[in-house]
Length: 125
Length: 273
Image (cartoon, rainbow over all chains, first blue to last red; front, top):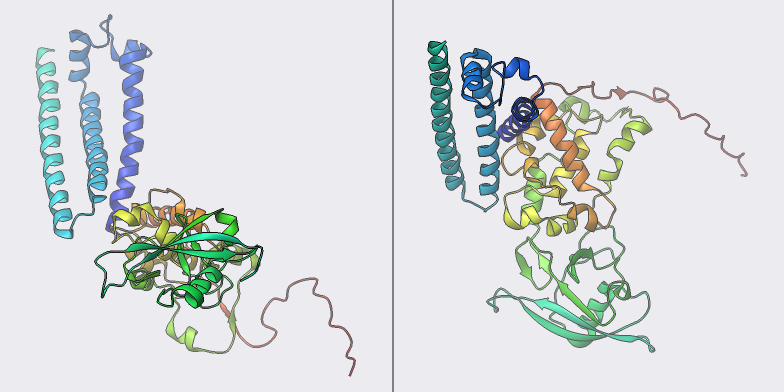
């Protein structure tokens, strides 16, 4: 049943990624909703607009969610590919542990970065 | 053998683990007539050319599932494959892939049946109900239809031989056991889905299937194991999310007349004696 749990979350993560990436495309590459996400005018990726979004806690949360789900989705997919190589059970456990450590490490780093950017943007007003 | 026949070269894989380091191919010229099956060709070799050739068979009519082997690269039953339907001059005959070879064309099916047994391929009900010989479990034709095609499986192992996932992952449960699990999960008389989910939903279970579909392509009985596995995956996810509809298993009817007769059954003809 354990694999069912991993698989279900893998698919759920895929759906969340599609939604969040859809939002990303909408905001960064279409200009639609620019009055909400890029109110400073000009390019959505400009310093002023980026700082505006970083200061908004909803964006910070969405960055963290996207990072978490993307890491889980990608690393579980990688684990599945590695398991296809007919590994021994002990190696499979080691692969799972390493990927878990890598995932948690990258997630921690990303969360630290997102929160840091939020704090910096909020401090600059 | 019949005159006017055609000579077909049988390239048969031979292997005796007591003598050979690895399998090798031996070629036999077999006179073939229209309608002759591969099994008959193998019998011809055994009776006329090489008595040491070994394979497994029983019913000779595509029912028992004993004579599954690799015929020109496709896992098939030797008894219901006509030679001239699959070749003109050369026929490669080998044991089913993805199994250890016991000898010549005989695969060791033990791992397949161990996986099958682990998935509880039988109706799970309370002991008292099963042991009560009176009465029967009532099931509608629609309920029967849901699992009927999977019940046609004869456990020949052709699907296991064709599965690309099993070729790289010998711990993968494989199409036959998983389709069998789905067959019993869909049976309204059964209450064992939760027990099967423990095995089917674990590592090397249903989620290892990549839906290559080879199992369904080669099945000699027209069963669609690939479809069964996709349904099984969906069921596993729904069960995990507690979104699956869990109907009550069908009840046991007691005594004559307690069942529901089918409509429009003609009356029996009058007695003549």
